[in-house]
Length: 447
View 1 (cartoon, rainbow, N blue to C red):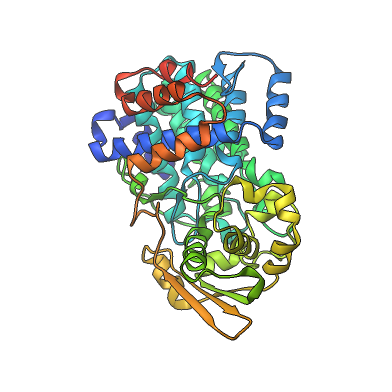
View 2 (tube, one colour):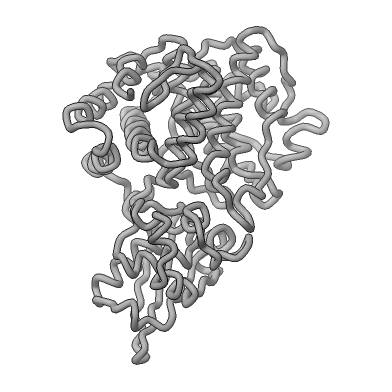
């Protein structure tokens, strides 16, 4: 059995009845969370730019969330961009990789709408995509080899799309082969000078996944030995690995973000807000902020892949631990408001972020790899007093998951600027009862 064939078999063989009740519940949470985030991002300029591009290419059979229609790949591009742009989406916590499985959801919804599928079929496909993404992230991390994590997403989203488009085993192998051969993304997206492409790369990957699946659906052959073939994915991208797919298991290792901040910042941000409130810290009296964290946080948002002290845009701010800690201490919150241009440029936060020191700690790295997200924050004042807080994880981490009430509160907060309470309640109820609905019952509410 080859890895490519194993992936195709997993896609083909997984059925709704293979998902436990707890897994179905968690998948519904991820869908509702993603929809709320997408609604909250609809007015953002990069998302508007994607919409302009998609609309220029013409109408189609799939709903653009926020109004309009487009073909499945283009609808996937815009809707995924909305889910991803705010950096408020979910994350899978593997030791060497941190992808965002919610990047698969808009692709699945577009394909489900196009193929007129049921809510059960949608949940099954999302569960398949989450499992493929999680297994690749855990067993075949690519970050340290110079590849971006959306290199996994194009494969996982293809798996979900193939499931919903009704591809047979050989067409599914072809679709995975096309996607994984043609669409591998470089890590430069998230290093050094960060641009808005950071927030759009996964949308591009999801779009390419749907297009690959549709090509295979219509008879295009692709490499059936993507992973194991000569000059294939294992040799060039990842190195040797094995996977062990189990329907719906990996969704339980996915965190939900409490704060609008990069994944690895969540515990530190929660900690510094708690510390600021507990000690009633005056930001003007702070002389130093020190964060001891795990190696991945230092690498990605603490300066390991380029300076994180030059912060002028949202794309730079939400990947800068110095900025996020400074803004969170001053404002005692971390929401969309902390990424407005005028907030980023203000002297108070620009001055304080330069007093932030981020260091990796071996013990904390070991704890992260064992399933925690630890952070130790020390804030030193002008009078010499140092306040400390230590965190094992945060509200939304798999060790401390959000309840349905918390997920719904987050959804209502994000969607209230566009939809009235009645519409929001209808969306929530549709997701809660998704196994008894059709995909069309959901998308009609997202105009």
